[in-house]
Length: 282
Image (cartoon, rainbow, N blue to C red; front, side, top):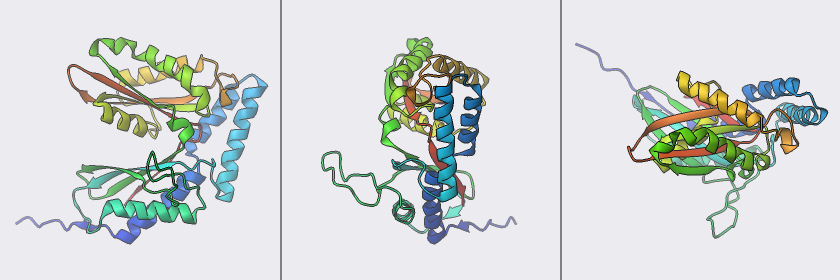
């Protein structure tokens, strides 16, 4: 007779403590992949001005890491992506636990509170909550937590395009024209996250999550599009800090999802040079 597997239990205290740590780590430590991309970009630049801007950004990241202080004064709105294993026991309100962790993490980490109670009542909540929480259930025995802290400067430059299916070939031109208009306001060099498919809401979800993928899409055709778009965007000459140069973007990442036969939703989410995120598995 086959024995039943004993389900693992996630302790609330450990979950909250992990969210607290992720809030601090995301704001203090620029992902190593981005630091390396900035260093490569500096080596690629030939003019003094973009090289100087990139040197300042690299030094800023080093100081933030060493002194445990925020990379940027805008410590952002927190988005938390949860992949919850079905083979787990969770006997607490996971949404409330996320808010508890963010509240504690931002206070302990001396991180700026940037959230207001409503779009019309602009009174600050005082603790950077509520965070935005997304949940997915997976066939695992763990919880994966991806925390993104995103400032308004880059977030305000995002956009949604409800295209028609026959406009598929226009996507590269639409993206490049959009980035040409928006990149100077998003603290370049930027990371471009693109979500294509699903519905309007899903494309936005994908575009933000795409910012955290550190490698090319495993689909060869999409990977080629990512590389092509990156090359075209960098030929715009906007450059680091919007002050000209060869590096307007560090990466382009595309995520896709099945969609309706009559629609082709696409969302673009721009991450500034300080695209901040941290992951953990419990």
